[in-house]
Length: 428
Image 1: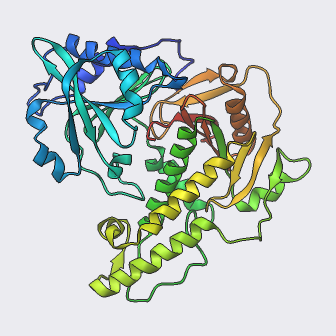
Image 2 (image 1 turned 30 degrees about the horizontal axis):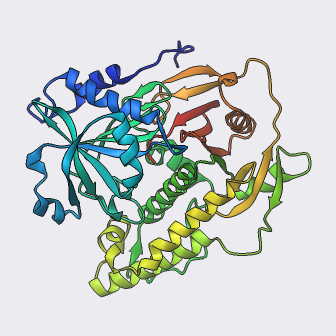
Image 3 (image 1 turned 90 degrees about the vertical axis):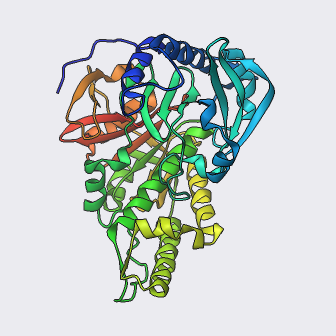
């Protein structure tokens, strides 16, 4: 563990240096830009645009830097992309990004930028990417979508840039810090182990047992569960109201919500009133996969088959997941946190965390996905929502909190190895 970290902030110049060392062809040459200074100029415009607002809304968009040879319309059409060229190119400037941003819905289109040796960077058009590019990695409602190896900047809010080389995340600038790799906590060992040891995790215990001839592999439930968790986080983030979701073992609910307990639920849900909506959908997915496996004479099914056969599922399956994620996001808009068990059953919302504070409280910030390297920070630097989550996890180590700020920052908070630790979650 490292001592308390000195405050230091990074901006486009440091960002350019880090990207320059990571980005390029296998032989070490760089595409589109000819120098680190050009890259810095490109990033600086995107950074300044992120600080602007358009009619009261923060600027959010995706910007793709591409070479002309990669923009052949027929090739783009094969991967579901549609190129729209402007009759007159516009200068690549922060005010142009501010004006164009609303016309390129974040999950539907990208602003296309090309570089001319004589005129510099110019906005030459837009790339309609379609619904399948909502996630650049595999998710419950899409397979891994083939993104060309363009330099793509996600402008996610004031000073928040996520830079990708195609579908590969290179670095993230968030809260003045350059993160060399995005933490997708759903891929961490400790989080998977936590869900496995708490009853059945995401599994639906009441789902019908498949025929003996078809085995449903464990990875199906885990992958869908964590993909759904990512979806819920993204919907909370996109709502811009912020929120906190706290996952607790069902066996601990009574203790947490008793009159003298740490949680006071303004809206507590009667636990026996209904089955888990998530478990119901998951059971249907399992049943359909088993039917497909029998038809295709496959001995087992799992996540890979789910992706391969996804087109054979009715559209309503993915839509039901989406609607459930949106509903959970809406519940976090109520003042207080959303209380869930590990099957996404709602135990209560508008939940107040009442845990005493102490002087000079500290929290560890993880510098890697498994928290092998951490730095100490004072809790006083965090907001009320974050401090409440830190204290709850300090006193009740079984709890896991996901805190989404209004500015879009996402933190996972857990008591890990007897230390209250948080991770910046950079995969939205």
